[in-house]
Length: 179
Image (cartoon, rainbow, N blue to C red; front, side, top):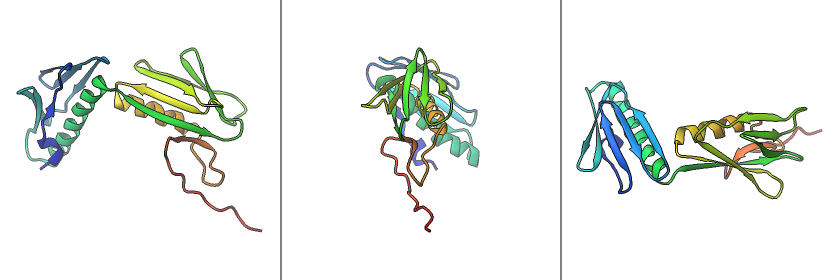
């Protein structure tokens, strides 16, 4: 039994939810999102809340039960509050800048790295030396994926700590070799 899946997702005022078959649509002050539930679960509206139940007792149906409930709860939070991830760039001369709709990163390569920002995601660059990147949007998965893609260009290295890291991320530092 899924402890998470048992709880229905409450729909707050100001958010309209529609369920048609396996498709859940949320519309709120920040925008509109949809989620198509897997065939292993059933989705229905009950008393202003969305209830999810597995079709059978198979392992796959039970795992999809909790995942579907969480994804629907993420839709509700996305259309009301939105999501945000902050990245920090550390390293001498490392900086970021917006060039139109693209993010240009100067991170120690012989060339600038440009990252195309998808629709539905907003990126802001700030800080004293243009070293803080804030990614925000209503789709949690898309915001997290864009942040992970940007971080993957220069992940933090353990010896000097240079690279792109999530805000508050702890990097395990190693000692260099001794003479």
